[in-house]
Image (cartoon, rainbow over all chains, first blue to last red):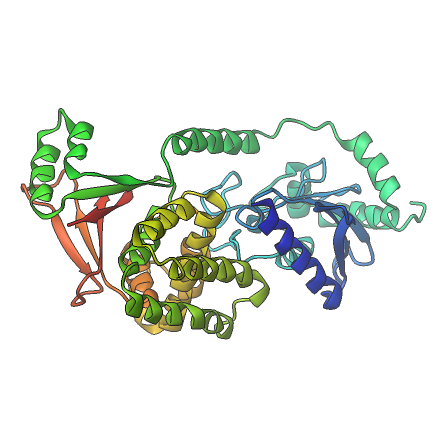
Length: 167
Length: 267
């Protein structure tokens, strides 16, 4: 099993290197272990996360791509769909039926024909458009709904920190 | 930058236990315990072995009696949500063993199937491994001349999780491809305002999602063969209900359906 997972991860890595989607870099942290990747995601333009470069870690199960990886930001984040410890909570990282957050039934789900690239693109959309219905971070979801100005201020601070600019 | 990130994480991470994930993990564990006690695909057993499951249930016992007039054996599959795809895939290949011409014809259908999927928009990279595994298994079986060796090999491949699950995924993809190719026809059977493509992404392509009529009809069309499904439930009457899918085809594979689960039947 692990052999198939490794083959698939190598193929995806090659594809991402040859054809990187805009604003995303991803690959194994160490080429000895293809089951742990690091990704760098640029905050989408025109959003409060614009300009930030956000590092995240992806951990793949031995039966990947039958099961999805887990993803966790390793920088400070404040976002309705990201837990305070950085774990990302979006529907594409869950198989249908796994419904802790009550995702919409039409939301994109994990299946073996999804890919790292599709996950990262979904995360970029999530940064641009938080889903405040499924609050992994309730404070962030509330602030996003009720006090956008304050939310944007915090986001800006986080963006500056990811760039190493004093806040 | 990474270092800075880690530092922040440490100060921030109170790591509260995440209830949702704990619940999911426990659910997984229970499913695993159930499924580990049942092989992916079991041995052929006498149809009357069903009686043991229903010793105190007269409605079912009547129906087993009826079933036994038409079928001699049953082969059970693991109830993991993949049972239709696993059973159908297994029974379809099994019926081809010892029939080189029909096997060859099916081999050709399978061989050309990947191009169809890629044309429909499946990313080749994500299809390759499943297709390769499927073809590898067919090739392996094609080259075994001794029939009983071939049956044995089929059985062992389908009980090896890695191979077995990849066979399931590929049939799921072919089924999804068939639904999307004929989306005008299939869209009438999909409830709600989901598109055929949405339905495929949510109900067909993911592992462990159970199958309905629509999956079966599309899977039959994809493999160009028919299935007879015998329905056995607590409904009125002494006989089980039968359905040939797609309607009007002569079935090559016979499946027993009990609410939520499919097994293979043999005459």
